[in-house]
Amino acid sequence: MSQEAKKEEFSDVRKKRNEKKRSTEIFFDILKGKFLADEAFIHQLPYIFFLAALGIVYIANSYHAEKKLREQKQLELQLRELLPEALTISAQLMKISNQTEVVKLCKAKENGLKENIQPPVKIVLNPRDKRKITHNKLSQ
Image (cartoon, rainbow, N blue to C red; front, side, top):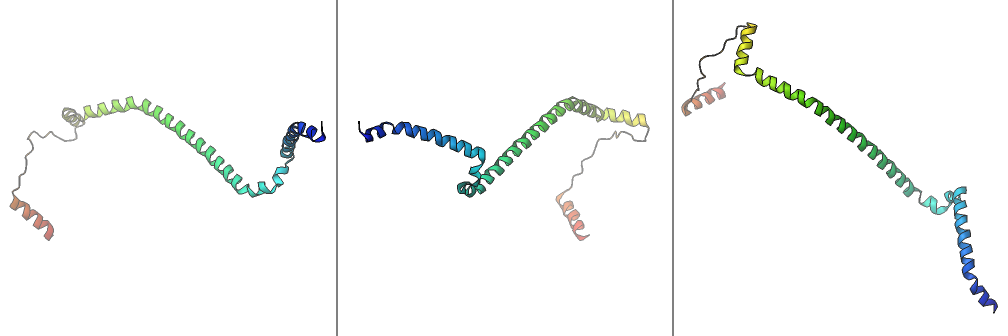
């Protein structure tokens, strides 16, 4: 075999060896921090800072959303607890505002109020009277 044939035969082995060496060099460069002084890294710093800020905003937003969900669940629980009480109070109010109950309360407190026995009277105005009323309001 010729010298060139031997070189071609072992070129694949050398490439694999160089790739392994290169990957270990990159790993040690990262550990040593050499990449921080690299010009390409320095050129990308604004983009890296933007991504970092975006990540911080994303994390803060998720914490805020979780806090709001917890508050919402707590308010829903309070609402469920207060709903029967609200229904009870509403029923009591309906009972107290009944006309017969109002009359009983007025008699019990003796504040001088009496029930109106006469039915209400509807006041009907003809169009001429309406004009007089509006004219008097405008002139005042």
